[in-house]
Amino acid sequence: MAVVLHASGTQSATVTTEHFLSSPNMVGKFCLQVDLSNMVAGDVLELRCYKMVLGAGTQRVAWVEQFSGVQPADALIIVTDEIANTLTDTNAVRFSLKQTFGTSRNFAWAVYNTEDLPLLKPTIAGKTVNKILTSKLLPDVTYYALIWNDSGQIFNGSTFETFVDANYSTYAVTMTELGTSSGRYAASLPGALSATTRYTYEVVLKAGGSVAITDDVHSQGIIDVSVNSIFGDFETGTAQAGAASTITLRSGASSVTDYFKDQVIFIKSGTGALQTNRINAYNGTTKVATVSTAWATQPDATSVYIVLGRVG
Image 1 (cartoon, rainbow, N blue to C red):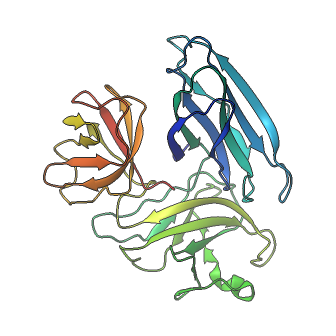
Image 2 (cartoon, one colour):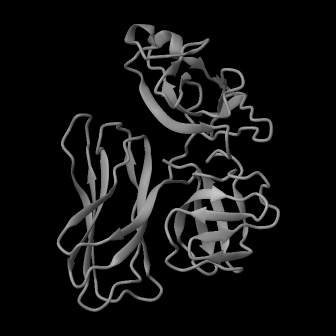
Image 3 (cartoon, one colour):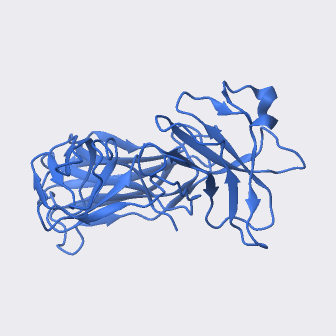
């Protein structure tokens, strides 16, 4: 199973205001995690998930949970149940946070996609990506891929163009099942993609005898050849040091300046555990990564981190 960070942040709650945290509009199974450690006696917090059942339908409350006062020391992080989504409508799934009583608190939160997503395995050093390799899909059926660039253009077999309904059949990149009934598929990508462009792809289930614009999207992913893909090998290790808005990565981290720029870093354990941040700059000589938001708890030489790649 691939677990991908979809969105994260720290919400400064305004009492009685419902704050919408994230609205995934892609295929997957999503769960919300919230840090409740700042709650004290008199505080009341509500978490909600809204869900759309049918495309172009009405979103309704799928579940709501309420928390009051100081939370138990062994239950400071709430992890909600997964909610499955196959729709791409705006607000098909929506998570919210609302503090109804008490003094306004800050709540760190993250939304994860735990769906068995197609995994991308790029070759980072040569800036060349050759294949999309999927994890387990349905065996003995036909899938194809659609590949988009960051200008919103789609690959038509030879170049990228503005999407045209009538040209849809030219956009399908054939996916071939590996082995016999393995449920694992591969697709060749359009040559060496540009190292300055980020691409996305969709894996589509072919419903009939020919490619059709009405075919259902099974899942989506990111192709990022300028830095580590979020589906490639993660940079991870124990930090050397930390400060208010920086963290010094391990000595063996990349020596290329800004190699991790715009990527998300997660403190897995040690000082400052369970914090996420986005890297704004990276010094390949000193290994110092500057983050976009000051740490709530500064990391130090005990902090174990994972650089998750570009997310969102």
